[in-house]
Each structure stands twice: as structure tokens, then as C-alpha cells.
Length: 281
Image (cartoon, rainbow, N blue to C red):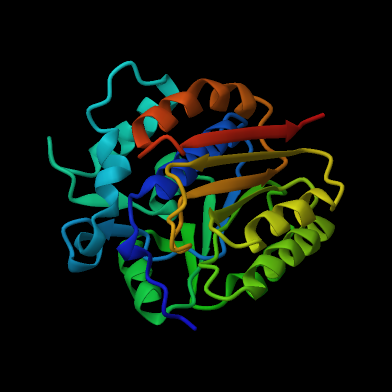
């Protein structure tokens, strides 16, 4: 359909959870000297102007990253993410927000590589502009990441973090995620795969999580953050979650320390809550 533009939602509560966790996974991966690849199946524009008409239409960032900029007693891991966002903005102002590729770029070393897919022609053009001077370190393909990822696995260094973050414009995307994980694990079983999904008043998201668990994966983690009571009319995203295959063993403890803070800061009513479950051998 190609109607989805993430610029409308940049910096919201779902972005905060997704990019904060992504940063922790990449930081852990970079602890080893050996290089790795970061692969993003739906990379978006790379970064977003929060003073644009897109972002200002709903100003979702004000109830997301905007609530964390002046937070006190913040868990150290979350503080590092907020510091990254601040580093991309003028002092005391919030004009820009990093998408997943820019978050990944901040953690990459000279030997690491980034492989990005973005099918939407407008966002693909912006993505190329964002990494215009990146050289061969970053490769961008204007194609569907569900299909493109197959040619990249296994990556040459045999280490990779893969973010699978489709717009879920079509119901079939939920099954495509499950198929993508199943196929990717057959090609490259030791990679770390991060699946983002929206929490909606429809069955497909939780059905997808159930199907992912039924793949009998040896190591996985599931985290979700609900920020408000679902709307009476039944529309809209009231939370989001991540399902991670082969997560860092340090991630559960870090999330246990951080999720209560995120719920307190990003929660909008008494319906806010979080869940955390994992199986890590």
C-alpha cells in the first residue's frame, strides 16, 4: 500500500521502547572485537524533523521522548539513550529524532556494517540523504526487506543484529514476520532478531507472538509497554512490544530496572502497564 509514513509518529512511546532496547542490544553486541552487521528490513527515513508538518500534526513525540528529556533518577541505560537524542539537538530543544538506522550508526565501529531496506520511494530518498557520506559502510536498497534479507544471511562476519519493523498496513504482515523469522533462523541461527509490533484492539499482534513462541526457539525475550486504556471506539495503538530472538543475557535484568520508570513517565492513565517474559539458556 505504501501509505504509511513514520514521520507522523516519530519519537512516540513506541519509538522510545524500540530504540532504547535496540541501543542496548547493539551495545552488547559491540562488546566483542569481532565486527557485526546491522540489518534493518524497514528502515524508514533514518531521522525525523520534529518541527515538520508531519510530526506536528499529532505531536506524538511530546508524550514520548519529550517526557524523558528532563527526567530525574533515570536508570543509567535509559539515560544513555536520552543523551543520544539530546546530542542530535540544540541545547534545550527537541527538533530532531533518530530513527533506527541513526541509533545504530551511533553504536557502530569502523569494522561494522549497516544494510538498510526501505521500499517507500520518499523515505528511501530521505534515507539515502541521511547516509550520503557513509560510503560502503552503509548500503541502502529500495526494496521490500522481507525479500531482500534472504540474500544477506548469513552475513560475512557471522554476527548480525536484525530489526524487523514493518508498518503492518496489511494483516498479512504479521504472518510475513513469522515466516521471515523461520526462514532467517534456517539460514543464520545465531543472529539476533528484533521484531517490533503495535498493541491494538485486534487479534493479529498477539497471534503473531504466539506463533513466534511456537517456533521452539532456544532463546527469546518478549517485552511490551501499554501506555493507556484502549479507546472506546476500538481504534488506535495503545502500546507496543518487541520479540527478540537470541537476546543478550543481560537484557532481562536491565529491563526489569527500566520498565517501571518508562511506565511512570510514558503512561497516560491507569491502564498503563508492562510485561516481560523470556527464555534464555
